[in-house]
Amino acid sequence: MPNPKPSRRRTLAITTLVACVLAAIASAARPQDIEPRAYSNAPVGVNFLIAGYAYTRGGLAFDTSLPIDDVSLQTSSAVLAYARVLDLWGKSAKFDVIAPYTWVSGSAVYAGQPIDRVVNGLANAALRLSVNLYGAPALNLEQFRGYQQDLIVGASLRVTVPWGQYDDTRVVNIGTNRWSFKPEVGFSKAIGQWTLEGTAAATFFTDNDDFYGGHARSQDPIYSFQGHAIYSFHSGIWASLDGTYFIGGRTTLDGVRNYDLQQNWRVGGTLAFPVDLHNSIKLYGSSGVSARTGNSYDLVGIAWQYRWGGGI
Image (cartoon, rainbow, N blue to C red; front, side, top):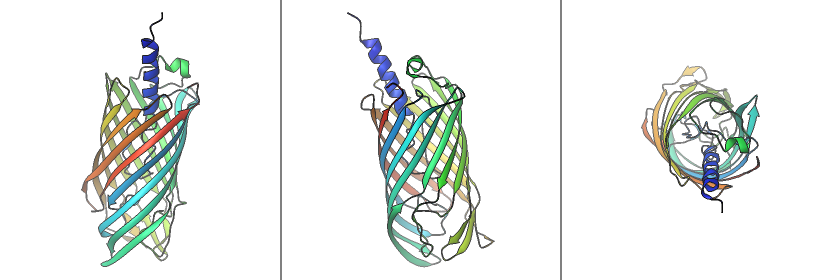
C-alpha cells in the first residue's frame, strides 16, 4: 500500500504556507500596525475571507498625533477583509480590502479641558496591492507543492479611504477625514524553521480641511520600520516576536507648526495555527514601549481566515 505520510506532509506544508499569507490582514489599517508575514507566497487564484476582532486601551490607535492628553480610551473593532492571490507578469501578488467597524468610549484632555467620547461607526477602509519582486514566483497549486522559500523581496502600496465616521464638532473620531498612502518595501528570509523579516515604509496624508470646527490640519509623513522573528513548528503552527519603530507625523494647524513629533516603539507577538486546509486562526497582541507624544496604547486581537479557490 502507498505510504500516506509524504502526501500528508505536502498537504500540511501547503496549509501552513497558505495560512501565513494574510496574517496581517485582520488588523485595522494604521500607520503603526505590526504585520508579520506580509511578504510570502501562495498559489495563484486562492481567495481569503478574514473576520477579526481587536481591542485597544490607552491612546487613540487611529490617530496617535491628535492633540490630546491623559488619554483613557477603549476601542473594539470588528474587521472584515477579502484578498486574492494574483499573477502579475510572473510575480506573485496579492490584492486585499479591509473594512473595519469600531466602538470607542473613554475620556481625554484637550486644550486643558476634559472631554468624554462614546461613538461607534465605520472606520476608514483600506486597499492594498503587494507584489513579491524576488524569490516568490507566481505558481499554480501543483507548482506550489514543490516551492521552498529562501529570500523574498517585495513591495506594496496601501491606500486608506476616508469613509469612516467623522464629526467636525468633536476632537475624537473614528474616521480621520483624509486619505493616506503607504508605500512599503520588505524582505523575508527563511533559515530552517526560522524566518527573519524586515520592512520599511512611509505613510503620507492628505490635509483635513474640516478639523474640529473647520480648522485646516496637515501632517508630515510617518516613517516606520518593522522586524519579525518567526518560528514555524512541524504541526503547522507558527509564532513570531514583532517590533516596530515609527517617527515623524508632526502636524500643522492653520499654518502653525505643532511640537508633536512622534517617535514611538511598539513590541508584540503573534500565534497562528491552521485548523484544516481551508481555515486558520490567529491570536496577536502588542504594546507601546516608548511614546514621545504620550498617546500610546495596548492591543489584543483574534482573527479567523477562510480560504478557497486556486485548486485547494
